[in-house]
Amino acid sequence: MASEQTISTGSRGRTAFRVLGAISLAHLLNDMIQSLILAIYPLLRNEFSLSFVQIGMITLTFQVTASLLQPIIGYYTDKHPQPWSLPIGMGFTLSGLLLLAWAPNFELVLLAAALVGTGSSVFHPESSRVARMASGGRHGLAQSVFQVGGNLGSSLGPLLAALIIAPYGKGNVAWFTLAALLAIVVLMQVSRWYQNQHRVAKSRPTETLKSPLPRGKVALAISILLVLIFSKYFYLASLSSYYTFYLIHKFGLTVQNAQFHLFAFLFAVAAGTVIGGPVGDRIGRKYVIWGSILGVLPFTLLLPHANLAWTGILSVIIGFVLASAFSAILVYAQELMPSRIGMVSGLFFGFAFGMGGLGAAVLGYVADHTGIDVVYQICAWLPALGILTLLLPDNRQK
Image 1: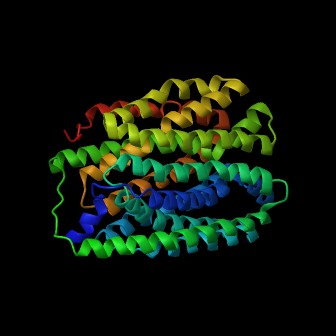
Image 2: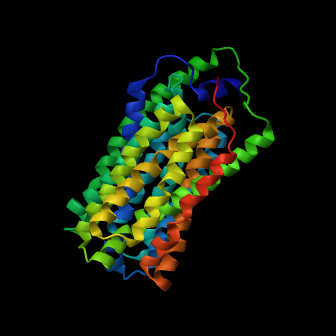
Image 3: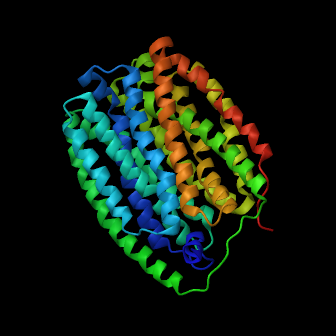
């Protein structure tokens, strides 16, 4: 439907910073809740005597449920926008959080992870569409504002877990239902704005949205972008899922101190996210993607051989540089398929989650059979795939 395609792209005009701020706050709360699952892995491992493979299965369950549904939901909402799906999706996350707090066995932990993943699959495609609608044409900036909320929330999860959950036990996860309830209230206001924008768009003349490139080049570019997402999120899975175990094993840190290091890494990821979108708006997204993926390679190669101090420094640099890619990749893909904003957003968010989950499972198997150190020696070479950026067409509007 043309009206939906029109509102999906974000018209040139005033950037709705209040809406961007609200959706970014909701993203912060959503991803903070999600990161609690990763942050309490040491507690879950001790309580249920889990292997690294089982730890990877938790991440895989969450990431797969989050990834498989996102493109489907995005495709459907491109044709039939669902403003009120945002608070409904957060309701799934709330249910998963409550179940995680009181889960008596590993199977129910997996179910809790699946519920949180389902909530994420509803949240991300529609909230990314809202960010584009509120952009006023500054699409990279809008995606960076939206993304920084999620990454900041991801960094807060381990910190709050170290302060609130680790000292007192898994049951204190239940306190974070307050964050889910706050997110539902915020998203209800965003949904009301989204619904009003949709009504206004229906009264406008229809508009045909076309890709700036031939179909073959679009397919090639999308394929390359997905390979880059694979390299980025497979590597990030090695740090988000197993960094605490690596620090505990190699340097003898306590669980709490290891979680503080994980917070520093994830906070750097949040800071790096701010850079990619606005810089891509100015110099072109291809160059941001190139510098972000391939540019991190020297640091990933050094990480497995560093002492504790340099491990902390290198992980912060890696998180900052690597994080700047996603906003640029997502907006680049949206510009290639401007009539399929929801589907593209769902595809890339979903693929990112899926690669993170697959990476966690595969790397858990490697850690069980060869040792946690080998995980970082293997993953160090993944950013070399950034060389494929050379094959991306330059789609900047002159």
